[in-house]
Image (tube, rainbow, N blue to C red):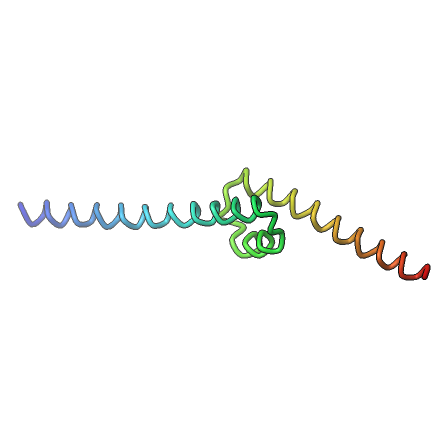
Length: 89
């Protein structure tokens, strides 16, 4: 009887440990996304987003998508402005 209880306790403990490690990974990803957003590191945010898209919190994912879309528009507009200014001179 003691062995059965010990085996059961070990099984429950190992399941809990696996569940805990599975839930800590997205938290770390969310923290890295938040740090990249706060530092205005758009290239770093793009790297994290492309690699860990499924693990990012839905709110942060949507916010990151909007920031990256805005950033890419700014970069494209800056390139076209450089091209058009370069052609005039």
